[in-house]
Each structure stands twice: as C-alpha cells, then as structure tokens.
Image 1 (cartoon, helix red, strand yellow):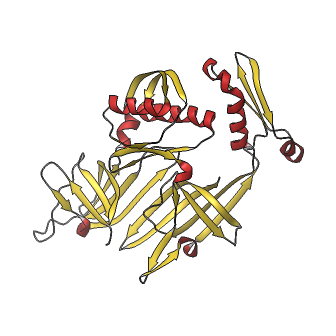
Image 2: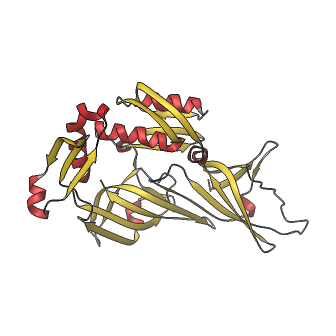
Image 3: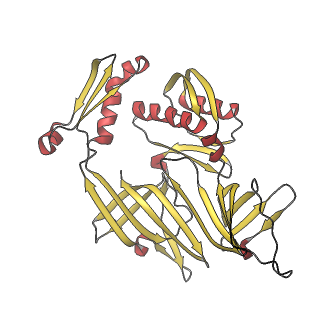
Length: 320
C-alpha cells in the first residue's frame, strides 16, 4: 500500500492523495508533537478535482497503518494554482493551552492521567512512574507534563518519551522505543544502514560534566564526581538547586546527573530511505564505517519527505 492523505470534516472523509504534490512531516525531541505540510495543485477547470480544505479539518496520513493525525492550521496560497497547508497533531492544543494544576503527593503517572482528564486529552498508554509529585503548576499543559517527567527522570534515572498517536497521548520508557530500521526494494527487505548518505559525526567534551553538586538553600547536600574523567579532561562541574522535597533523594539525583552528563558528547546527522516508524525520541542502531558511527542512537529530530512515491528522511542523532 502506498501513502495516502485524507481530509476529514463533519460531513465526509475524502482521499486527497490525487491532488497532493509533496508531503513532509517532522518532529523534534525538544517539542511535543508532529508537524505535517503538503501542497496541492489548483485549477478552476471544471474537470479538475475540487476538494475544499479548511482550517480545523482533520488530516490523516497513512500507509497500511496511521502515521499522522492532526488539524489543518494554516493555508498559504501562492499565485492562482498552488496551495500549501500546515498541520499539527493534537499536541498543538497541549502546547497552546495553559492550566493551573496541583499535585498533592501522587505518583507521576497518576498525576499526568489526572491532568489529561482535566483537559480532556485522550490517553493511549502511560507507563508506571513511581516518583511522588508534590507541586502546584501554572504553565502550558505540555510544559507541566515535561516537568513531571523531568522530576521522575532525575530521581529514577529512567528516560521517558511522550508522543501523540492516533490522537492519544502515549508515555513510554525510551529504551523500549527501539526501531528495527528496514526498507523494501523489489520486494526484498534491507537494513536501513545500507541506505545511509551524507553522514556527519561530531564528538565533543564541551557539555561534559564530571562533578555534580546539589544545593538546597545555599548548602551543599550531595556531591558526586568521576575522578577518572577529571584526571583525563580536567574539572567540569555542574551545580544545581534542589527543593526541600528532593533533599532525601539528592544523592540519587546527583548520581543520575553524572551518569547522563559525564561522557563525551557524540552527535551525528545522516540521510536515509524513509521509514514510517522513525520519530524523534525513539532509538535506532546505526553502523556507518566512514565516520565511525557504531551503536545505539537517540533520534533528536527527523524530517520526512514524500514526493512522487519517493520517501526519504534526514535525522539528527545522539549517542546514548
């Protein structure tokens, strides 16, 4: 099955693929949600297919299964015959809406479910997250969720990823989102690594931290360091404030920060044949001998392009 683009409104669902030129969709680990853009031809000839696409319409991209579901937010007309549309998945509303939300000693996963119920956000799956949250939030809904997850990640040392699928919120452990990268050519399945082009790799100690101090009310309450890294690279110290509710977990938080920051940062970029499963925040194994990339990478951002049936993608990666 080839990719199809559908427009859905109150009255009908229409397959608009025949009038669509190129399609692109992207997301980034620093933001919640996907963006999709496409352009259509337009002709006032009475034999040319006429499909009305209005702000607020639902747009669905699928290829055997659903890849993107979102709302058409912006239409741009260029001259008389070309129109470009920009769509966002339901995270658009989480990013644009604010809420005051109080957590009174509840588990992180329970708190997020309570918040979603409060603002009518459908939940697909939220994994169990045992960290206890006690705080009053006043921010964008997406920012509240991110902050709750950040608190949990610091105390548990576990990375989480939130993403929208079929209009529902999913929060899962990052380590469970491993993509088996492959593509089909002539009916034969190949490893995605065989399609790598334009690879680039950078290694740096600029953001390394090999000593961590946590402070509460100007008093140091936890210190951890990696003496081997200090001896090799020199002292690179991070100091962070923690609240009263985090004092009892300060040592654990510091150790998890050191584990995350105490290393040589490695970032890469490359292009590949497109795979619908590739999204920011997921993991992929890369082997590329020219630059020396070899191992499990976090997808920081990805941009998919689809034109005349040719699916390509470009990615920014980070070694985990």
